[in-house]
Amino acid sequence: MTLTTFPLVAFAGLFPEGVAHYAAGGLFIGLGVAVIYLSTGIIAGASTFLETTLSYVSDLSRFNQAKYVASRDWRVLFTVGIVGGAAVYALAFGEFGWTTEVQWWRLLGGGFLVGVGTRVGKGCTSGHGVCGIGSLSETSFVNVATFMAIAIGTAQVVAALGVTP
Amino acid sequence: MSASDDERGLAFSLVILLGGLVFGFGLGLSQMAKPEIVLDFLQFEDFGLVFVMGGAAVVSGLTFFVATRYLDRAPLTGRGYTRRLKTMDRNVPVGGVIFGVGWGLSGICPGAAYASVGLGNVTILWAILGMFLGAYAQGFARSTRADGTDSAESVTSD
Image (cartoon, rainbow over all chains, first blue to last red; front, side, top):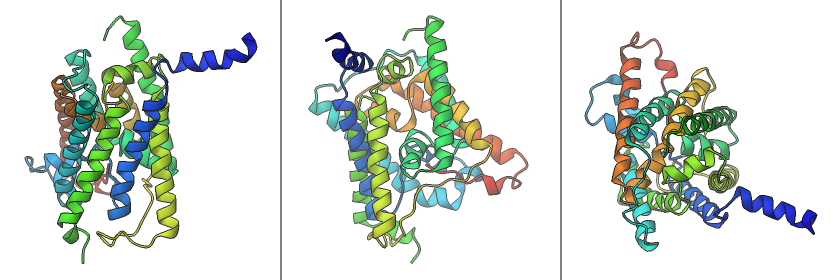
């Protein structure tokens, strides 16, 4: 009896909130990528928006490469869609107005490193993690394995230092 | 007809917006727009995020597989279907380390941060400010560092 129920108990321990909404959310994320890809051939990641949007306000040559200027308008639209889609979710499920308890300096400092790291490493969780893995790209496997291991280590160290949340 | 010419039409814009809406809805539903949930995952308290990234990668992977194999060209742009294959160099793991520290510290990544704004989470603007500052600092460093010598490796995306 104990032996047969053990795997289920262990599984529930790994997923205290269940897995249904996680998997369903993941399917929608993939579906969003698929809608754009099938219609336009474009593989849309989220973090290039940062650089292409900076081209509106900065003269730095880095941000004004032809491919950035050419894609900056639709990347703004894509981001507006992301904000809107999450708002639809929040309104439909009565979560609108939720705010994070994570401290501002963690968000600002972590965000800064995310901004640097995704640009240096050629992608983020959507670009490498979803689209790159979906493309079976070795480059993306290397990047994802790296950021996953480092993020786990960082989060555990920060928690061990007593920073909550 | 160049790709950028037909990327301004109404149908193109609607498709981008629709894709973004579905993508953002998924980020909300998956809870990834909440840094707390991401930090729970990174601290091994809830492994649900495996299903988020896994589910999304399977859907996009199947789409890429079918399109590159059986479909010809994208209807709205005339682009061919390709996979997302970036060149491998030292920047890939280095960027991964920097991103990993940032993600582990904040619990938020770019797409999830935009979605978090949609939840009404104004506090997340700290993270978005940080991301813009980081992207600017990286671009500034690269633009001023021996301008031109690294232009070949400076092609990033997503």
